Length: 206
Ligand code: CO
Image (cartoon, rainbow, N blue to C red; front, side, top):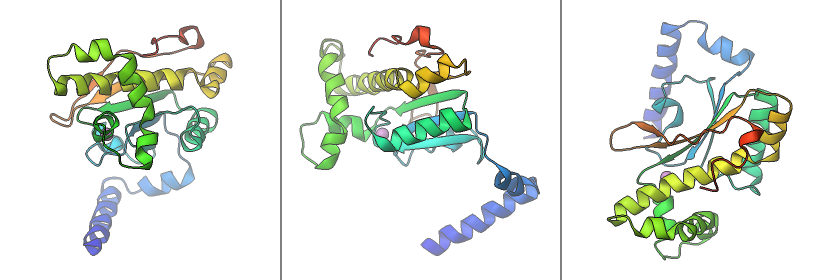
């Protein structure tokens, strides 16, 4: 099976060179992506592929349930590098409907470490329980929780000191919240974009 992957890699690389002989040479020179993607690890949500971007065009961070926890060193390292060094112009927080992480956060089962990782989603669930419990069925509730989770992570990113400091320096940077639908391959913009420090309290805590 792994030989298949290596063979596919050779075909892919040859195809890239056939279409653009200087493609890999340019990438060796530098990466200058304009986007940071913060998305779910789910195998059905391949970041670059969904938005039709090539290698070199998007800096990507993925974890279970697309979280941006203010104490997570991995996420913070990615965020600082993207903002301070790469100077990306857009940070895309991208959740997806049918997220197993979001569902697992509130199903009451014990899985181990991931229960701790998913704790922020349980908090969002409890804070928005009146809205969520009024939805017609469990699926609609989970979909809305996926959206609420994205909104909260947009808030986390936009209020982070790295991002706030970039805005104070006058850096061009926006934080966006999207949800991807595995069912039709389409992205829905939640329209919670934050583009500067004056909007630091928007969106509301999601
Ligand atoms: Co997911």
